[in-house]
Image 1 (cartoon, rainbow, N blue to C red):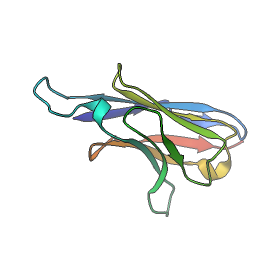
Image 2: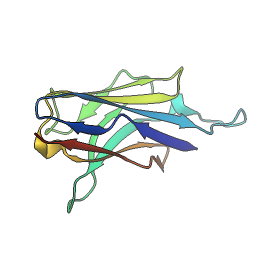
Image 3: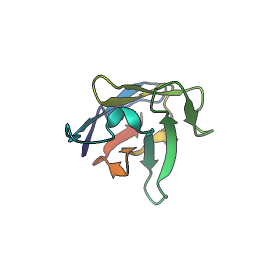
Image 4: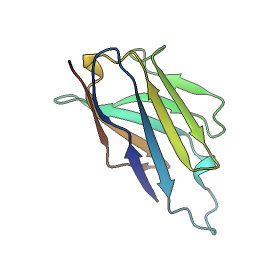
Length: 117
């Protein structure tokens, strides 16, 4: 299984970004595929431990967020496209980090998000 993130970049404070994470490698013989797993976004800022930002249930109905991003970030998924998303609004400098997607024990390579004027 491979997870590939995209959508990171440099944005000014108060701006928005949308991250995507596309999953591939689930074979036709796989008992479990993308739609069976909870999907998560993590981030790691320089000098800090990796932290859970948000997660979404396999059906996309239930979501959870870190207190630091509640009301600003929205996690979602499209099981028909094997893709998860993280919409980030009202970005702050403290949101600067490498963002990673996680599913079924696999990690993406990370995408850099830098919030700076």
